[in-house]
Length: 562
Image (tube, rainbow, N blue to C red; front, side, top):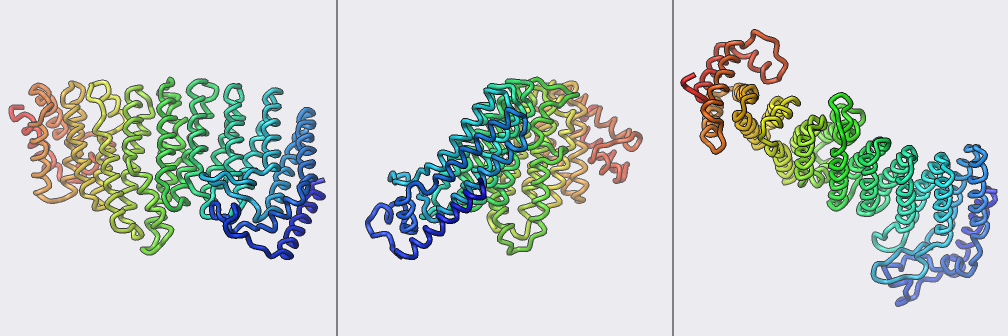
């Protein structure tokens, strides 16, 4: 049956070509087809031919009806191989139909309602998929529902191939298919079919990624927003938490695709992606978490994790390495760098909200949030040094890196929060970030990280249990000054520390005594115990007597009477 229909569609396509050759007509100036929306490129003879032969697609319509009948009949019998084959034939017929109508599809115009923008055959096909989805849900047939979702995703890809006349027309038939797909997935959310929802969200993510290659990136926004909304179901139903994970995975894949393949201005879709990620993560962080299960980290990991494979962060790091290896005049690398700069603009706002909420909820996701901020900041600095990075963009990237890492200054000052955050090695993370900035010659970022270490020590110095954080921060700052290797760097570090102690909110006299004693103890025990932190290793490689003397000087700044 399918072979017959395909040959019939090819025949009608050839007849239309012959008709166009015979007429060799152009659209008359001033006519709606010629003037509205840049439609002068429309193949008018082919349009007239299909209008004169209104029933030319009858066999194709009938074939769609038969194929849908097969899907329902054999799904009831449990023969899903036949069902899947029938769905695949629907895709083939639609592809052949679009090829036969080449040059006759009319683009929509936001100002003028044009005749012929809707296509009865495409509407017929999509409506059948909606009905199949409804029937699958009524019968609790998850396999049929997944097949219907895959078919809608396939139809979206087919309709993206349609070429419309005019300047940058919208792929409105593909957008229509995307709307049917989104509605179908949404209809599943009220039922206990998490597997079906996950497949639907995968199809939506794939549709968005494919659309980036064929149309303006702004057209993916509706899909992105819907994926973000559907991810909320994991916060409402424990059984649907994997749905949230798949949604985060798809949002990460779309973001990466947009950064690498997006052209022209991607500001709007990037902002919507960030907004969807933030909303999904914030809602899920209100669910219960535990240190052992790490539900927050595993669920949000596809976007934020530095350890899960694959994750957006790891993809981004691999991309940065490729950018650094690209030559100076590499246009693709330059475009990707511009996209990364657009994505990084105001990124700090999203991360600050998530970081503070994770700390408030005592979530293990705090580790991921801190690591993500540090690693992305390092990545932005690295890309700013790429040969392909244009002048001006390098400064913007470094500015975004500084703002992003500065979100760590917003961490709460209460004792419980400080101790909780330090369990994730914030002091060492700030040291590593500062060291990376120094090595990459990003001096402003390097100084920002030093200020963060001073601020972190200042916050911790007001609490009894914060004295170890103070000592750690001081040792980190001392290690950085020793890496610089100049007396001026050591003097600068001591002066900045003295100014911090003289500022508002500095530790009390009693807490200074406690912190100073801890630092003196550290100097005395230098090299006697195994240490695992990076700045401790740096200090151990230095002359122990010199380091001990410097730590004693800092202890004297804290409290000379100790």
